[in-house]
Image (cartoon, rainbow, N blue to C red; front, side, top):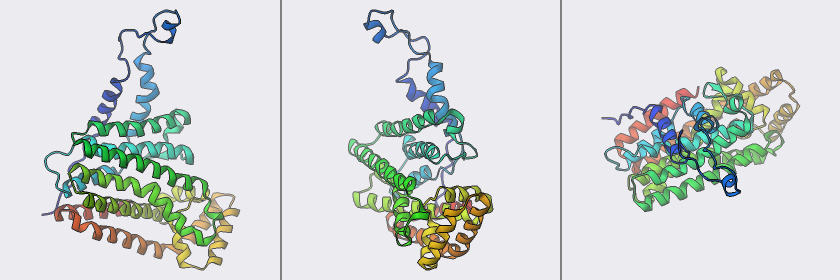
Length: 354
């Protein structure tokens, strides 16, 4: 019997939790006036800020993004590792939300930094509400996610561990993002490209997936060695999925815009790392020069075609090896039925990346 993934909860409980959470800190309509600086300075007693203003400032932007359907794999991974490490009964509902909210916040900020036009089938949030409010919303989500840890019905030691891991994850994600934003792959020495790509991916993508896996293990009461092994699996899985994403961006016609966006920004993506193992440094340098000289999408298309033709076979093999190794290494640490369910879910994800 294989483990069947639980049906995804609708977004309604999460959006309801958003308003309930804010309700603790924001005065509801008709609340008694509070005395603030105006009153202390001898002015009239201050009226509370109307709740509608808070709604436009924070609730509506957050709802706009959270209502969009995504793959939600991080939350699923948390459920799987919780069950796979011996969790029984119902998983605490806030636990899968923890990483999904962190991820949502990071996507909002990332879209501003990359000036992306779309996310999850809709205009990027900063294109709707403006960059300042989008940045504030994304950053606020980090703190909302961290605050959820205190809501978990877990031992204090487990909550403390999750808080430490979440903070470390956020720090490493920002370190990876710093490389992604500052490095132009067309100016890197070819010998530095593979390690730069790998380091960026592990810190920007891998650690968040690692947190999703570890959260389930910690909540289930797994011992430190088992939690660490599951977290390592999450990181390796995150790297494999980023490889898939980068591969699809140059191989799938439907994802052409993403591939062009990566080339336009000179981002250190996996096809460039694979290129370095497929051809000599002179050939890499020549394609870098073509990327630097490109002035329009048509010229970028030619660069993408050359990059795809030279790196595709290597890339497909690398993705298969990365995912197979990650699944093999974690097998001894998860219940067999859950491991089988995880394999099936990853196969579904592979197909979804094109």
